[in-house]
Image 1 (cartoon, rainbow, N blue to C red):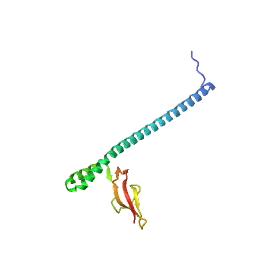
Image 2: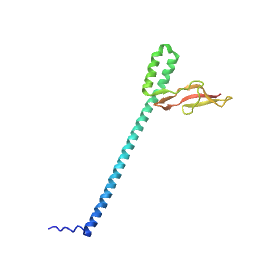
Image 3: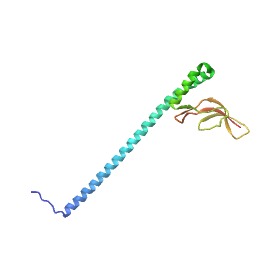
Image 4: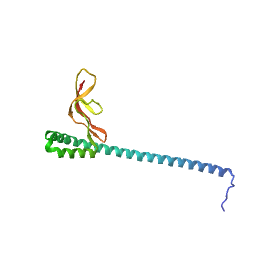
Length: 153
């Protein structure tokens, strides 16, 4: 025969409080574990996206010398190579790759241009005197800055 304590007995109240405290601790542990897992999942996703971006950027960077060579070849014989120029520009646009504007007389911007020399002048305004190597944006971010000579006007 099982003895049942009275509803209001002190032993039952102590046991109820003990179980309630244990339940609250377990619930708090579960909530922390869920939050930790969600943070871990977000961190892994962020790392995955960063690795993907680095790999893509590195791959596109390897093609820049080829694009430079093709651009020089096209500029040396524009009539014969005009169809290749259109295909090259179309492909670059589809990939999100665009050339940084660095024509002579354009305003120098250190975010987009690397100055390798500075010609002194009378003015305070810095403009591009010559583009030595083209720069490129990839999906709106500088992949390789344009290498330029700068002069003050």
